[in-house]
Image (cartoon, rainbow, N blue to C red; front, side, top):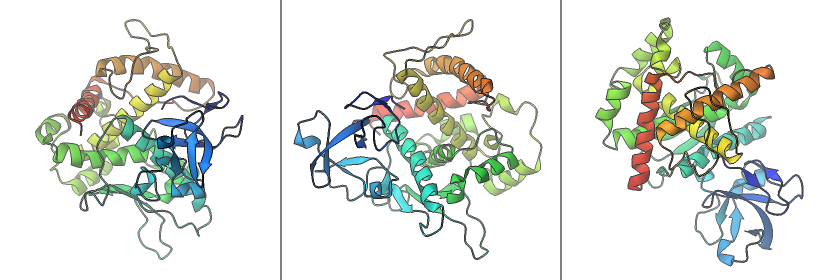
Length: 357
């Protein structure tokens, strides 16, 4: 994530901010410029970035801005409908008549918008359901039924990403993290994992990369349900970290790919944040410190350079967390086997960028 500052007063901003805490300027995110802008009104519902005098830069807020769940904007002359780029992929939102669901929806949207920030920065293709009725991307944020039906499970199927609304409750998510023996479980992690399944379909299955992917992750034709049953019925081997970034990645090649994809998103997004704040980390012997300028992990940095810089960053931030009595910021081990899988994802992303999608 970039570092954002208010153009009116210079105050540092967070990606989700809708007003500057210092000068109270309204803020809107303009995805085409990857910029969080301080705004001035120039008409009924029409806004322009502070200091801009060009009417072609006029923008309107997403319809979901009225619910305080979205701060993204669209060019006012662009015929995109009532929703911004990110919110156009919503199909079902939580039932807002249920107490607490407004806050759950806000948390879901915060995570989803960070997902789309990364998708856009990586210049990855993405299709709506209108563009691709069979496999286009949509999000269903669903509540458990009160009629005794099976609970909603987070997952992906043919472009439909279902996120259980209860995952936005911190207490529930922590209980599940402990129950499932996971090191890490966040809303953003769910989004990044499930979008990995979407891109497996688009870039691997339909992108002519099946054989290369199978050589790295294994054969996805392995029976999925049987593989999951076997995974949960057995104890993991002591050396599982040699080839898998998480225990769940062991369950099936599809899950291995999605977990690895999610970690690639974790790495490039967090690394961009470190670079944007000019963080410098004293590297251990024979390792490379984080570069401070002229690098873009989304588009230009070679994989080896990203990893050499990522490792000392995780050591430093894990140590900071431990100093505060918190769990490790990045509790994962990037062994040679895991790095080979991350490199495959990196190479696929770069190929897509170079081909224009």
